Image 1 (cartoon, rainbow, N blue to C red):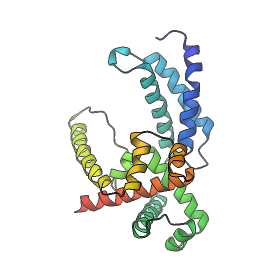
Image 2 (image 1 turned 120 degrees about the horizontal axis):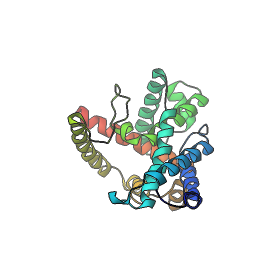
Image 3 (image 1 turned 45 degrees about the vertical axis):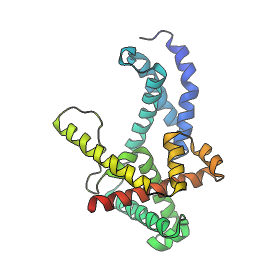
Image 4 (image 1 turned 180 degrees about the horizontal axis):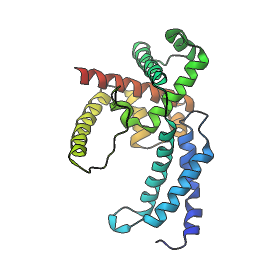
Length: 235
């Protein structure tokens, strides 16, 4: 066990707070910042006890992974929606992708309200749920089928898991091909977010737009990729 646990917790609390705020910035207002910080703190305490340098990862890397993973796991538990609501969200997702592809801009809430035949408040609520779904489980959001709403495990434990890993590898190759079909601005946004790991605020500064605009653009790009992947798989 690592000595002086109290000083370690004090040292890493700013990291927990930063991660929680960054994750919160991507999510609907009903997700509490304090809950994310609490989950991260618990994960830090557990990581201190379980860290083993023999596995190769540095303590900082190990802790970062455990803290962020705990926050994402907590958010997944919140993602329990009735089937009819999930269907409405998928319909919203498809309409955003269609509109973005056709006009090269994001639809307004008013336009989505007219397209879907729903109130603006209903559209906003559904859009928040869509952002939550995209953020907490991007992997399953892009690759999951309509019938399979279960998140995929990454641990290879048996033959079925191995087959799943092979399937995922092929899908990721398709994802790369789809990303290459995006325009330069879309590629830049994905690169800044996932390759350079910039926060939404930092990306907003690079692009000269608001954080909420970056979040909406990412959502539209995800929807576009999902539609492209579905088309390739159907084909």
